[in-house]
Length: 272
Image 1 (cartoon, rainbow, N blue to C red):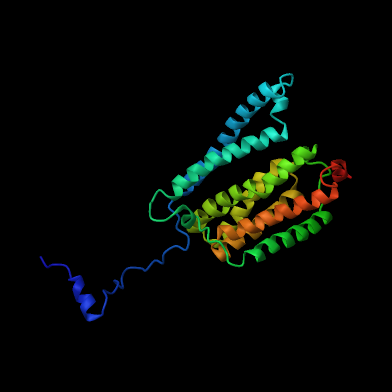
Image 2: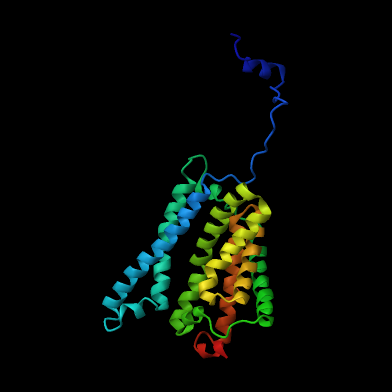
């Protein structure tokens, strides 16, 4: 039986072994994360279950300490209770994200999700602000419902501040990690860039649908936001770039609401 070729021959002669011409050469996938689509689905299920568990716990604690005379079903609908439950759930899911990303041990968490902080980061913040004004202009010509479930978060100044801060910080961070950091790469690997971009943006729009009364016009606006964020992720190979746009978009909307309500002191103006 003949022995295998000596690898030192190729080093010495300056040549390298040639691929078998009969075997097809398959290029490495552009996005090849160490997690699978099933694991991303598991993250989604974990997120839903965590929110339910923490909402139940937050409701019981809030009822016992702050609202002893209120029924639990009413306390669970309080905006501060639901925001607290989401925050706690996000921390739990983030821990599992880190475990999935670092499981292979080959790269760090930030490298695995393609964090890649952009050098021209102010441009992405400016882009998010421009996107907010453009889509707000579009919203004014679409048949938007007069009342939406998310409006209940703007009943008091404290609730308005809480939702605004949450919407500028933790909410966009978690959404970018899940949709552009974890979901998009597995869809690209399976389906290619264009279907992955559309499906990721569609999923982003659908998770916001309950807050928007499932009305097609506001959901379309959120879908377009997701489309821009996912295209940015695909073009820059950077989750951080999309996060900056997302934060600036939400921040611009919050500033406009702040100004329209005189510093959240006259929230009734938002419904006029």
